[in-house]
Length: 89
Image (cartoon, rainbow, N blue to C red; front, side, top):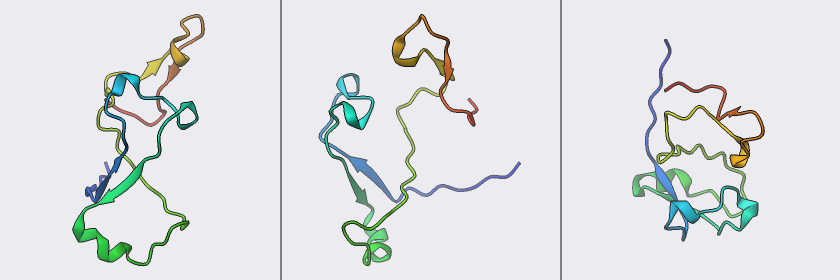
C-alpha cells in the first residue's frame, strides 16, 4: 500500500463558534473564512497576492469517521447516499 505524509501548515478560521448552528454550505449564509499559516510557511507564501488562485486541501477534523452514508439533508424518504466514494474507516 502506498502512503504519504501530511504536514500541518495552517488552518481555516471564521467567526463560527457553534458546529450545530453552522450552515452546511457557503450559499446558506456562511460567513467569510480565512487561512492562517504557521510562521515558518510565510517565506514560501511571500509572492502570493490577493486574487491568486490557490488549491487548499483541508482535513475536516471534526467529522465523524464512522458515517459512510446519509440521507440527503435528512430526507429519510429518499435513498441513502455515500458520504464520499474513496473512504475507509
